[in-house]
Amino acid sequence: MSAEYKHEPVLLEETVNLLITDSEGLYVDATVGMGGHASKILSKLGRQGKLIGFDWDPEMVNISKNNLSSYGDKVKIIGSNFSAMEEVFKREGIINISGILFDLGVSSLHFDKPQRGFSFKHEGPLDMRINPANPLTAHTIINKWPYEQIEHLIRICGERFSHKIAKHICERREKKEFETTTELKNLIEEIMPRTSRKSNPATKTFLALRVAVNYEFENLTKGIQKAGQFLVPGGRMAIITFHSLEDRIVKETFYFMARMGGWKLITKKPISPNESEVNANNRSRSAKLRVIERIK
Ligand SMILES: C[S@@+](CC[C@H](N)C(=O)[O-])C[C@H]1O[C@@H](n2cnc3c(N)ncnc32)[C@H](O)[C@@H]1O
Image (cartoon, rainbow, N blue to C red; front, side):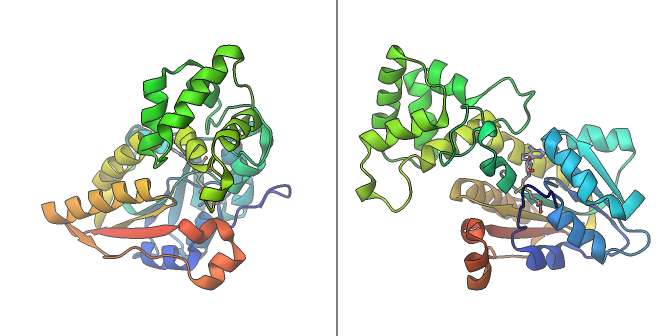
């Protein structure tokens, strides 16, 4: 692992045990991050078994290459959005995969690095891009999007006070543009007293910005569709989500696939971390794992 930052892989044993059905197969980690899940998968593969890891963030590509270097040519890391996996597989001549994992969202490194702008706990620029080449930033959304679009975005991400928050953002930016995570967090805290909630009142607005900046729902829907075409019969897709909106997309898509035929739900109900994992890693508390298998 990177000496400076650490990411604790979530639901590690459960995920890897359900994902691997053929130890000599080709596996894809669509969100390789620091390589925690990938390393566990690789450690369970036989002589022929291989893993391809994707990450959209060039920084994570370097970290995972370094962390997984001891596996030599059993692993290949690709800097790409997983929604473009079809083109990558065509380029690499890949037609059959035995399992694919999506561990969604961002890594602890993203939250812990103030300059990436993901967290209201650290002062940083309003950025939130997983890939710094992405033209859209949280700064653009907060300072340029019209009221209606901001209100809609934070409402669909579960914020009950979306009107109030969007209205105050638009009023405040008339006087001075927002530059930092702290400016935005402070405004939300000022208008929404903490007493009404358990978590910070800026939580859902920050989540909504991250989802929009990185097209997270679009990527997820496309990723599931693309991955399905490359799985061999008996191959599995495992998805770990961290909030209810993502989980709803996965649940509905998996149920739809099972109803259409050719797919079997392996987890009828999602798997959540046990108490000891949540105590050891607070970030895991909202994780949900769902798995589906291709049957023909
Ligand atoms: C929760 S972390 C994965 C952690 C990883 N399982 C581990 O054990 O280290 C999610 C990772 O997915 C990457 N990511 C997010 N969206 C992506 C996308 N659309 N395509 C490829 N990678 C993406 C992020 O950069 C981040 O490194």
